[in-house]
Amino acid sequence: MDRRQNNYIKKTYRLLVFAAFLSVVGFAYTAYNARNDLRKQSDTEVATPKKEVVQSDTPQVKGDTVQIKDSASLPVPYTLQGPLNNLNVHEESCEEAAVLMYHYFLEGQLTFNGSTIITPQLANDEMLKMKAWQVKNYGKEPDLSIEQLGLFAQQYYGYKYKTFKNVTKDDIKREISAGHPVLVPVMTHSLKNPMYGPQTTYHILVIKGYNAQNVIANDAGIRGESIQYSWDTVFSAIDAQTPKMGQGREMVILTK
Image (tube, rainbow, N blue to C red):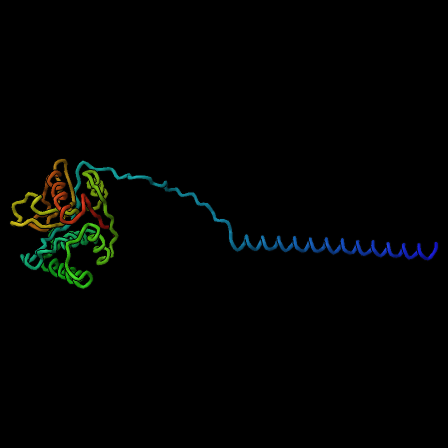
């Protein structure tokens, strides 16, 4: 073997050894990356576990499931809007009187010294506080639309409220059947009650019950505890306030 052949063999041998070395290094690098990827995946699964789907034993209720009763009446306590015969002070306090009656109903205070009538001095003082709050926060004691009335009850007492538009007789019955008194806007003279004075005015009526012919209401504008008005009369009175207030057949309920 001459010298040239010997050099060629040595060079080929070195190349083979170097190629083998590269193969080993490449395999080790691939294995190392694969091990790191597996570790990262495992760490991620521990840090962010899969969300467990829990099956509830309580079925989800869809739609309105409240059964409308043939008749119903809720024990809402009563006050005049001028409880100390001081209507001159409380001429604009029908909203306050309505919210106050609803307030004591929600708080479960249904009688006062054995009576369903809120103690007159207490009612007077509470309504004066509401009037002062409105003057401070609204700049005056305004006529409140149904939406504004719900907002006032929320701001003043912290209650939740829900308003309804285009209400029907069944809408009112359904809420009362569910245990919710209903507040509706009316014009007083359209209620056809002779106890009202000569001038019709915007008013809030508390509907707390009904039967086949009539609604059962707490009317704070007159001595109207559990007074009954026909359905037609109530809807006529609701319609009568639309030109003044710009709202149609609307109502609001309050909840804790």
